[in-house]
Length: 159
Image (cartoon, rainbow, N blue to C red; front, side, top):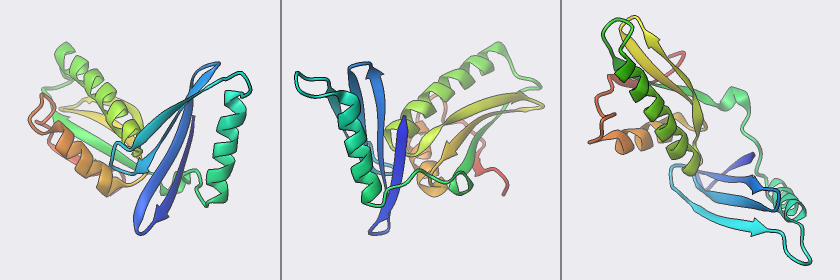
């Protein structure tokens, strides 16, 4: 997977690609926080998917897109209150939330889930995100009215 970012007109834009199999790949792009657009690229009679994708990557790099520097990424946590070390049901809920956040953050160009923890009265799902403020807003909207809407806080690690 290749994920590139660039700020244009005060908006963070993303462009990413990943292989779906040996003969096809997905290219996905948009403004961070929005689902964006996607297209599938496949091998053809006179084309090779890897070469086509590499040309698009090179084009984006020439336009000023770049991978997100690790020091610019934010570590966001979604925290829930649990009794003690939590129950099996709490753990299953955490795993469902991790899957949901991976899907949400991936398709909005914001990042991915980076695991979770449970114990000592809390349960957390950690995420690596390109923009904390946008990610927090998108997550809050996505969780509202769901089984996951009972979080105690969404916060940036280290603050």
